[in-house]
Amino acid sequence: MQFQELNLSKDILKAIIEHGYTSPTPIQQQSIPAILNGGDLLAAAQTGTGKTAGFTLPVLQRLLESPLQQTSRRRQVRALILTPTRELAAQVHASVLTYGKHTPLKSTVIFGGVGANPQIKAIQSGIDILVATPGRLLDLMGQGAISLNQIEILVLDEADRMLDMGFLRDIKKILAALPKQRQNLLFSATFSSEIKALANDLLNSPALIEVARSNSTNDAITQVIHPVDRGSKHPLLAHLIKSNQWQQVLVFTRTKHGANKLVLQLEKDGISAMAIHGNKSQTARTKALADFKAGKIITLVATDIAARGIDIDQLPHVVNYDLPNVPEDYVHRIGRTGRAGSNGVAVSLVCVDEHVMLKDIERLIKQTLPREVIAGFEPDPHAVAQPIQLRSQQAPQRHAQARHSAAAPKGANQTKRSGQKKPSGESTAAPKKTHRKNPSQKPTKPLGSFTSKPKNV
Image (cartoon, rainbow, N blue to C red; front, side, top):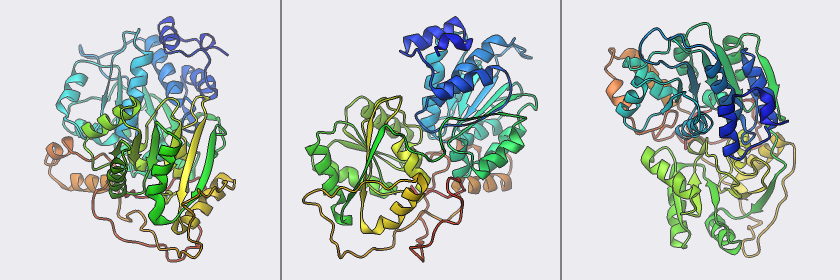
């Protein structure tokens, strides 16, 4: 199948061709016709499958086809795309700009961590499509800076991650401000019980699309485990980068402190590196990602939430410096590589403390990952596992902010929130130290479900 067969306008097709694409991916083949039909959609697609274009293209087409029914002189928002993180919001907006460049449609993106005034001005200039994170959108709604009463299409992108980050209450507040008559599109990595519950409340007889088995890993990704002592992880990572002459490596750590520490260690080894996490300003995060994409630095060290939405063509290497506490995050992490038909390598440095986590991951993806001990970095066979500090059990920060906003006088909290430095969903409060009491204890939630697990990144 070719894009020309999907009933897209010549202006959109021109942009697709200029971007170098001719054939739609499986998710695009199914989602584009479904969305063009005008009905609601529930789609499950793993990262790297082309799902962003899968909803961006038909949303552009729908807005081009439907007559403008503006009730004011100023052009108002007709399509709202909600994403869980700043980086993903920027990525989605880039897709809107790319494919809508030859159309008269206007768009902008809003998220926290930067000044709100330029975003307000962009909205007031008149736009058709708004890409937003929930926190900043609620801020501007509270200030009366945006009207959502003409929304025709709502897209919830990576809905599983939004629920995982504690955005359900915010989403419900936003939904309450939208017209009842609209098209709803929900994209998720899995059809978990939580996603199905949200879909039941939000969607009206939706079309169902699932292009890949939930929690499966991409066959184009070569996965390998390197057993190593906990104190030798940094030297082993430096060895792998130098001996293999890696030029672009995305490295995941469990905590923000661990990310900062690893960057300093790599820099001492002569390996250029930058960190991206919730304590970094939006300017610093944007620069780190831009320098990494441009090849100015070799290593980008990231935490799970901050890395959500990183989209890099043909990223060759992903390294799990620390295994994630949540097995599903392993799938999302390594999904940064092996995209769009290219091959990738996912390396995990696993010490004795993480053996239980590794078993949980292998159970989830239904495969035993190959082990390869690197000469000179053999782990001590007599090493004893130590408890790993898990993520904070505190409620996600957005919930606390929502409760505070509800209790405070109207407008009392707007100035502070609109200039916030921290991304929605990431808490910088000191975490409570909690340990798994029984290392052999298995998760009580069904595999593949995305529950509200507070993040300590």
